[in-house]
Length: 508
Image (tube, rainbow, N blue to C red; front, side, top):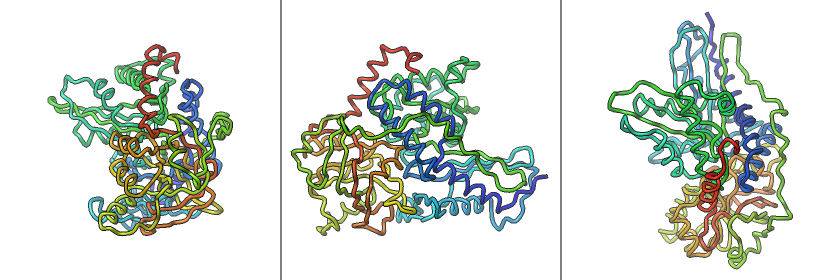
C-alpha cells in the first residue's frame, strides 16, 4: 500500500508548475517544427519562428513561455488503496499550497492572474490560488496527477452547444472555429467532448487536451476507428479554413484535434470545444509513496534549428518618441515595424478605470496624446530583468474602449495580439489610428526588447497597472492600418482560397 504524504504532493505540484511554465511538451515542439517546415505563408512562418525561438529561450532561461501563466487545473486519479499521511486539510488544500509555492518561487516568479469574487471586487489573490481541482477514485494505490495552466486567451474561446442528435459535429466545429478569432494563439490544439451532460462535455474537452499530440503518426498509419477518422477529418478541414498561425493566414491552424466521448441522453448531443494555445502547458506524474515526483525536461536537441531575429533590412524602424499621425497613416497592412522609444501599457482594468475617470471629469494619471499603448500584463522581473515575460493580450477585450481612447485621449496606436472586431476597426479608420500585432506565445522573446519599465499609474492593479516601457527594436506587424484594412480578414481569406487548390497532404 502506497503512503502518499502531503509534503510530497505539495512539492510535486510546485515543481510541475515551474516545469510547465518554461518547457513545452516535446510532442508540441516536434509537431510545431513540422508545421514550420511546411508553412508557405511568410507571415505565419515568421510567427511560428518566433514561437519556436521563444520556446528554446524559455527552456534555457527558465522563464515563462507566456506572460499569462494561467489558472491552474489539476486532475487527480486517486487509487482507492492509497493511504494519506500528514495532511492537515483536504487534497485541494495541499494542491493549493503547491500552487502557492510554485507561483511565488523567487527564481522564476509567475504572474498572479486569479481574482476572487469574479463578479464584484475582482480582488487578485496574489498567489494564483485557488486551483480548479478534479478528483476521481480509481483502482490501485497510487495517485496520478495531471497539472495544467490554462491562460485566458485560449480558455475564453471555449464553446458549448447542445446539438440535436442528428446534427453534424463537423459542421458545428467548422462554423464555430472562425468565430473564435485568433486570441487563442494558434497553432495549437482543439479538445472536443461529445456526450454526457453540459458539464461532462466541457470536462472531457479539457481533459482531452492533456493527451499526447500524435496527429502526424495518425496520418502516417491511417485511422483504426471512427473517432480517429473524425479527428483526421476535423484536422484537415479546420486547417483548410486558412486561419493560420496567429490568425495571419496560413496552412496550419491546429496541430491536432482530440475527441473524448461519453454516453448521453437519447434526445441530446452536447458538444464542447476548448482550444490549447501556442503556450501549451501541462505535465503528468505519479505519486507512489517513494517521495516527490519530478518531470523529465526535453533535451535541447528536441528543438529545431530555428533562431528568429528581426529582419532589419525589410522591417521599418519607428521612433515612438517622435511619432506623428502622418507616419502612422503611412504604415501598410502586413508591414513589419521595429519599435524603439517609450510606450504605455494598459489592459481591461486600466481601461475601465480610465473610462470611469473620464466620465467623472477627472484628470488621468498619464497623458496618452500621441502615444502608443501596449495591451499587456507582464510577469514581475527577476534577477537583472527590466520586466518579466511581456507578451501581448487578446485585443478584442479592449474593443469597447477603443473609441473612447482614440477620441478622448489622443492615442495614436495600439499593440496587442490577434484580431480587432468591427467596432474597433471602425474607430481606427475614423480616427486614422492603427493597430499593431505582436506574436502571442513569444512573451520572453518580446520582453528582451524592453530596456526599462516603470509604473506610471494605477499601481494597485498589479500587472494591470499602467507601465511605461522603453523598448528597442520591438517587432510588430501592422494588423489594422489607418484605412481600416485588417490582415486578420485578408490573410485567412487569401489562404482559404489557396488551400482550396493545395492538397492537404502536400501541405503537411
